Image (cartoon, rainbow, N blue to C red; front, side, top):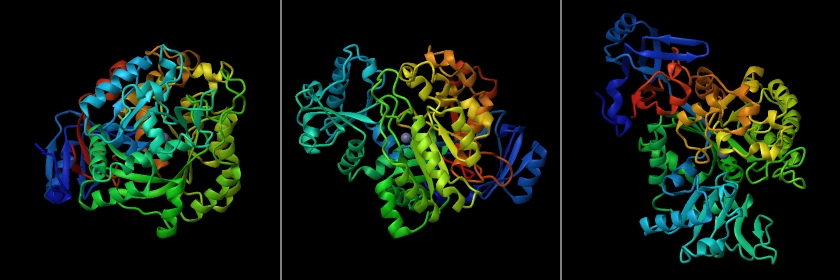
Amino acid sequence: MHTQYESRDDLNDSKVLGLINGNIYVSFKPLKRVKALAIAYGKVIAIGDNDYVRRIIHGLGGEVIDVGGRTVIPGFIDAHLHLDGVALALKSLDLRGTRSINELKSKLKDFVDRNPDLEVIYGRGWDQELFIEGRWPTRYDIDDVVDDKPVILIRVCGHAALLNTKAMEDLDLIRSKSKDVIRDEKGIPTGIVKESIIDMISSYVKGKLVREYDRYIHDAINYLISQGITSIGYVSADIKTVNTLLRLTREGKALLRIHAYLDLSDFEKFLSFMGSPIYSDYISVVGVKVFLDGSLGARTALLTKPYNDDPQNSGQELVSVNDLTKLMDKAFSNGFQVAAHAIGDKAIDNAIVAYGKVRSSIKRSNIHFRIEHASVIRPDQIRKLRELDVAVTIQPRFVISDWWVVRRVGTERVKWVYPFKIMKNEGITIGLSTDAPVEPSNPWETVYAAVTRGSLDGIELSKYTAYEALSISEALHLYTYGSARVLNVKDLGKLLPSYRADFIVLSNDPLVTKPKELRRIKVLEVWIGGLRVK
Ligand code: ZN
């Protein structure tokens, strides 16, 4: 019926379009379902029954498509993912679920043998908690496999990495004095690096991909679209990737709606030559992303009280309240949003204090401040965020990946971990996301995790907090309209008249699918702005 479109020039004749005989969810809250909808110039112009929509489309001289009873929902909006990270991950070694250092070595060997042309070996997803050896891996482990080209293996959380000796030398880390270069008892770097070094690594890897980079990003965009994602919040964007996106958009190749939040160092640069955000149908630069703390996995998330399984350690403060206040002031006064990564409750305290200082000086019609993750959040903080109208992006699949979290925080704080339902009931603006490539970008994995909360996967957290599971319609509402609110976009996330016609056609109706079957739902077609892109 429709073929894959190559560029937007091919699409001019499908400007007016009617879908009839559908099971079309135009909104999940309030839940509203129709049989037909009419689209003109990229937007929904009418919804209703078949005859009504057929009449409108015939009047406008458009095309009517019979959906054959299939389910149509608004496209997924992933409010927080790392587009460049997804691009690299698509061409990298996947180490998720690796159960030993030996298994890691054999996966590395296999990958290197299959990809002899790669100049740098990049992988991610390992978790030392799963290793039967019961220790962190070292550079000597992987030097055994590859010693002639750099190997960089990012931990599952994205806040620590394992490098071989060649990569340590290339990056000049052997002699580095940084506290983020981990050393053994003799003071010799082990090959594990953390936090501040990770940013350096990603620009190092991208620097090695000069010629291929546009294709990497284009492939990542198509990969996300194929999974039913029609808009993203692209966090920690760098100017190199933004330039690539602008180039792809000009060529008609970037049909995903991308809302970029610049990383801190590139924000200063962007501000000095642009001065304000940029907005367009496909690529917008809307904010700045800042890391207030690290991760629970690496025990660098900033907690008020020490870790249950590391009583001397309360995590790392990466930005002071003072510096955050200054950044907010600068961003808000130039019209940018601030997205602050805050996982531990102390990091959230810092965010609240800083925002409290600058908030009175800004207009409040939009979301200005969003907190990313809010993994360990106290009830008093939830109320405060509601009062201050701060948005939160959550990643329900962390519930399954962070299977060890009860050990980290202890049973007294367990009720503060991923309190999705309580935050929703409190009325906080919530967007759903995957943090891909930290979690798989497939939206059904996230819906499944939000709805089951790990109860089908034997996750300890679910025994304490089963009541925090979302219903399917709640998850879908937050993954569409909720995420659009977080991104400050008023015409995405529903299929009501005047909203943009971003929708997906599904193999099954998720609202009548058993939770354990959710991950089997297939995305058959993807439409963005009334144009078919899958
Ligand atoms: Zn992230």
